[in-house]
Length: 148
Image (cartoon, rainbow, N blue to C red; front, side, top):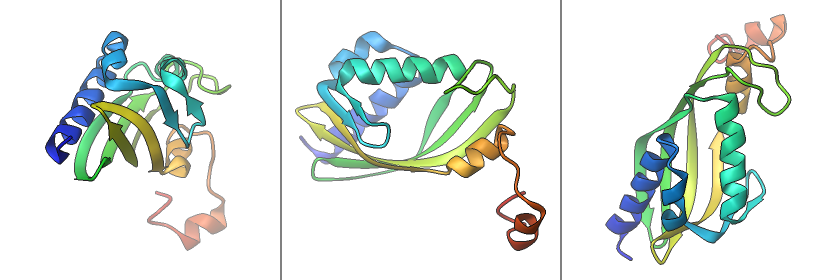
């Protein structure tokens, strides 16, 4: 497939993800899908994980900030936002919002997302915004910009 078609597949994947259109995911995500960060295998594993995410963050949204394609890979820098109004991975609802950046490296084969090869997100910022962790006073002195 062309680079532009691969990018269009990822754009549509994000649009449908944001509208929670699980039925269309059968067309966009391979049954053999692998997500290395979350150790997910298969389309059903992906759907189950996303159901957990959306229970914790019903307004979770990804916005594409940048996208680069080469070969069968598409790299995307996302802005991710949401409010924790439900339980998430054992954490009671905090009612707090998060706003962070994440980068994903997707592999596209025959018009479907087959792999989330690599992803990077600022989990420290995520948990800090939820109020789950607090920096020490020494850390605040050492890294005032990063911990504000």
